[in-house]
Length: 142
Image (tube, rainbow, N blue to C red; front, side, top):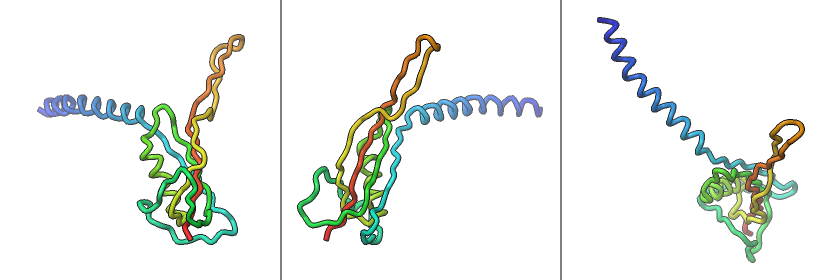
């Protein structure tokens, strides 16, 4: 009697384990990464943090007077590439930590970020890994 209960349980466990395995493989294969590094400038007054939703993303410096608070460097994967909304949200979050009203994007390019060697010693190949590099300047309006 107990062995039938164990068999029934194992019948349910197999499909659940298979589904969990497939879900984890799909989740890991679809991972796009966005990493940020923020550097506050020395000698600049540091205002209180702002709300990320209030931070603007600009492609040119505004004509309105402003103070540069710091730099935000974004490293994003290319294959798979994250949605641009995710990259912009990361800029907003990091700019908000510095107390910024806006982040001005001054550099946005896809470039080699690493390399790896494959093949035997007598016939080696060097392949590069591409990444997206983005630099923004956090500003506070005066």
